[in-house]
Length: 322
Image 1 (cartoon, rainbow, N blue to C red):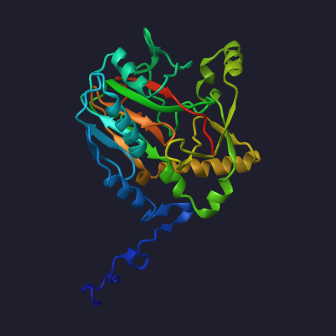
Image 2 (cartoon, helix red, strand yellow):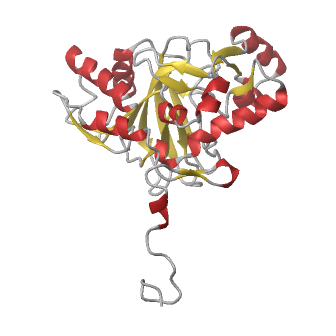
Image 3 (tube, rainbow, N blue to C red):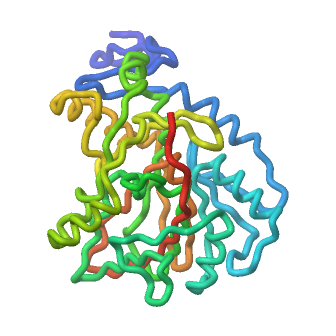
């Protein structure tokens, strides 16, 4: 008889006890156990205070629900400045019960910068700044892949404000991933390997199938393939961010095709770790405002044939730099 009191039990302690707070790499490079680099960011966010609204954190290193504001009303400059600081701190902000007209949506988003016009996704009729995602039994959702928005632009979005107009009773959540945490989670060897590398980004992978050859030529002239650093520095916080994604990134400039493909798969898989993620369940008139440089997002496609109607305003950003 073992000291546990049962002949079939040989364990005297939790199997993790011998590992301590280290974490472990299992087969196929899968990480398990403590992701110690998250602790500092959790503590930093826990210490923040805000004067003009209440914040309830919803993720370890990203995501906060903002309470006490009505986005349909004009907000004073001090509140906008504080929201901007909160956005860059939490990386994605969530708001509940925010009925917005198209004009009010555009007015709020434009307080943070000039808005984009998206050439490949239809807009709200009469409001070209609002991209409209209208999913039905006839139109499925294909945004269920991790990505930053419009990295095929020379100046991709700084941020985006997404408003839920109609949502299914179950499903249709959006997930966000902290790409600073994803970068910090890389081994030192991989960090050294990606330093100084650049990746190509191209709109054709996502939108080319819907264009005629003439339209492809016209759009290619307007939007040539662009190169951004694989690891960029956030233009406000200065933090290093992993900046490749499965939708628009087509290869790494400095590497041969096979090595490029292997490395991109390894880097893109960083977004798959739930420890780096937060998940938002939509309700009618919910709003999400995310830092498009700091996070990737993934819209779950688990609600067909229910309807899901969303509108997004995106704010033009700076050109990414290492």
